[in-house]
Length: 119
Image (cartoon, rainbow, N blue to C red; front, side, top):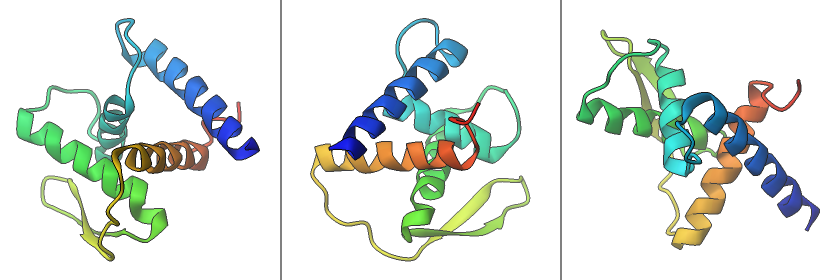
């Protein structure tokens, strides 16, 4: 139970901090945070992205988030500087609630790895 409480506390803190930095008042959801991670991982700074680029940013983030779980592995950067990943293992069939928990845990792990919670 403590792990759930810790996850919830960290999630609430993360959503609050990122919402204050990147949103116009409405709380960011999982997809919004995944998008921000994609922008961060691309590393090209703030700019306008086309619709297909936004989809690709979310894919980059999901691959990066699930890499520690053994589902993806970084492969290469293309000529435009976009990272590419290869799938190592098929993702399990999860119910929507289970998917959300997995992604929240992966997001928390990502932000822990960059020292977000240690300030």
